[in-house]
Structures are given as C-alpha cells and as structure tokens.
Length: 215
Image 1 (tube, rainbow, N blue to C red):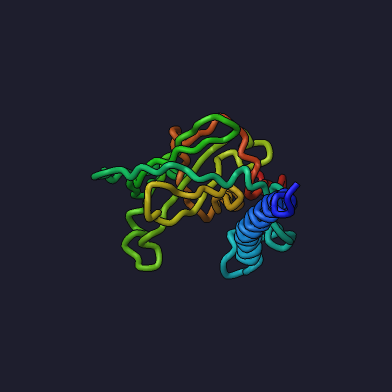
Image 2: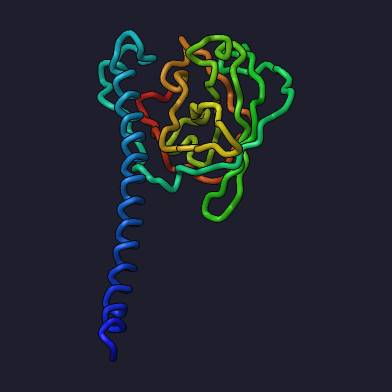
C-alpha cells in the first residue's frame, strides 16, 4: 500500500474525532452559558425575596425564608418556539386575584414541542408597562401546567420575556416564577392565567412551592 494512502487512513479518523470533539465542546460551552443564565435568575430572585424593601413576604414567612426551592435545572424545558405576532391586537381587561382587572393586549403566540408533542401559548403585553421606557420591550407569559397544586402554586406561574427580533422566541421555563400573591394574597393583585394558557403536561422547571406559603 502506498504511503500517502496509509497517511489518509490515519488522518481521516483523527480529523473526524477532532470535529466531533470541537462540536461537543461548542455544545458544552453553549449549555454552560444557558445554565449560567438560569443560575443568575435564581440568585437574583432569592436576593429580591431576602430584601425587606422588595420582598412580598411578610411576618414569619419573611424571617424564615432562606431561598426558593427550584426544580433541578433541565434544558429540556428551554425551548425555541415558533413565534407569530398578533396584528392589530385589541386591548382587554385581564382578571386578577383581587377581583379587579389589569389592561393587556395579546402580543403573539408561541408554538413549541415538548416530548414530541406540540403546544401553543399566548404571550401578552401590559398596556401600562409598555408606556415605560424600562419595560417597553417587556412581554408577559402566564401559564398553568399539571404541577400546579402539587409541586407549584395552584394559580400557575409567570415567565418574563423580551420582544423577539424574528419569528422565533426562547421560552426557558427554568426561569418561571410564582406571582407575588402566591406568597401574600393580601397585599398583591396578580393577573389570573387565561384558560388558553393551561398546559396538559407537567413543566418541572423553575420555582417550586413550599407549604408554609399556603393560605
């Protein structure tokens, strides 16, 4: 066998292995970046609840609070959804936990797959917040799932988003949290999750619930 042929037999497997190794490192780097974002969210949420000027907790709930319980981080629940913007949305009043309402409009719909099945959630925009420079690109995704009343608050959870640049949007349920009224129903007025955003599956991601907060 000619020397250059032997050389090719030796180099090709090595080149293939190197390419796989680079791809693996790239994926690991990306996952690390995503996990860092989730850990940052968890840290900031804990800090907010430990801050007496920001926390919704009162009395013993505040003094006993150390940190939130979270589901284990699982990138399965970080999904890229197909986003379709709602054209000419009509403002509407979204009912809240106090019996009052808050003004929102439908911003668009996000369709994603989880365990091979497709689901669609509606994303909203607060008419009050969109007038503020700080929140002009803020979107609101309230949802319910099959963990509610068990591992999570019965009224559902929230996810904060930013207006996407294109026709896709990242939904990272690892960064989902409970509304303030889950911890303090007396001082806070929280939007109720619309029926269309009730998922028939378990979303084991984000903040969990503790018995001490049940009313």
